[in-house]
Amino acid sequence: MQKLELFTYGNTYHLYNRGINSCNIFKEEDNYRYFLSLYEKYVDPIAETYAWVLMPNHFHFLVRTFNPVRVLNPDGVEGRKKIRSPSQQFSKLFNAYAQAFNKRFKRHGSLFERPFKRKLIEGEDFLKNVLLYIHNNPVHHRFCDHTEEYQWSSYLIYLSGNSSKLPRKEVMEMFGDETNFKFCHEEKAEITKIEEWLEI
Image 1: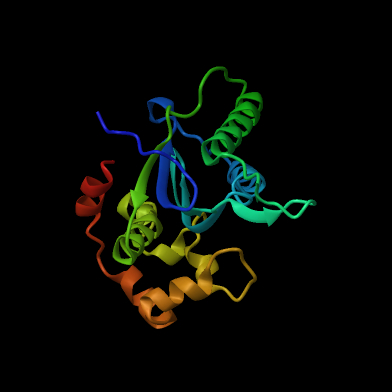
Image 2: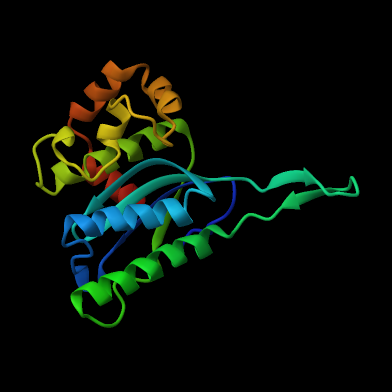
């Protein structure tokens, strides 16, 4: 049985989960949009997101949780600004989405497998490999032939000129530039090797 990573402040994680019994968790376009709106509500306050993909029956996120912020209290004494627990915020996301999904499709019971899985990511090389793995997930599962053909991932956002909360500048610098970023995504990713390391 896979050991579940502690989910704490100031670390980078690959988070992933699937529908219970591998059932679909996204059936309509509105499902994807609503999940992302809940993600923004519950996760953006506690983590920076490097990459994401939503597949019909599972999802992947690459996030870096924020550190608690040091602040001065009114009396001048140093304290810490309260930051909500990462696990608690993701649980709120999943519960809120499951309730809406169950209501929409007239179903009952759990929607997601529990507990949701996470893997601590240490080092820039691992971060880059997991980012590539996430963006190539639709290709790996044969939903498309190229990463740019899949709508529900962060890949196209990186290449767009639109404003985004993704750390576009930092990620492009990791890959050297946008040209190499695109080139690396076109290379055949070592999916099996990465999955073994992530214990998926």
